[in-house]
Length: 259
Picture: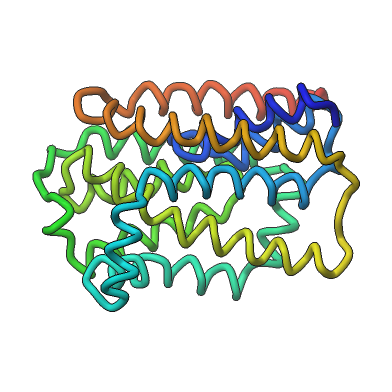
């Protein structure tokens, strides 16, 4: 993998982790385009470290607050919101890993993401702010996050949509979605490191590794800040249309044997 390919994959991961269009699905397509289908686990780990660094910087004040009050409401909201994904990941991880590697359902998963985004955008606008989020809200949003274990189902898309369904205002829905991504991304990295320690890894040069991580971090930070501001005044429908188009193209290419 060249440094340019690593840089481009970092851009894809950084942007699509927080835009509601599925980072895993786009990384699958990006690796396939570059002929890097075997450059999987170690590359994904470094890319996710980059996006984790990005969101940690954005939410540094909230993290300091949780360190000072580890059993405060904000910490507990993240615990409750993370539980469904932990349960689904532990129980069904092997099945979803095989689905992810095959990519056979990826087009349909993009279509599903678009459907959820479109429906959420039509929901009457809510007014809940961060201090009004309940544990029931967190559990509901976390349940949607658990569904994003499918490779091309967007974690950020489903959690933002779930927030809108629970009457959070648009900015708060995005804000809580990205905050909830911290334990989700961190947990994924821990699991990936466990597999890496088992010897299932690929050879990637230090330069490419650093380029992928740095690119992912920079563009991830930009995506978080941009998306929160975007939803203050704009619609999710543009993302729904994008993933619908992408999904139909992938399904067509798979049916014709091109992809």
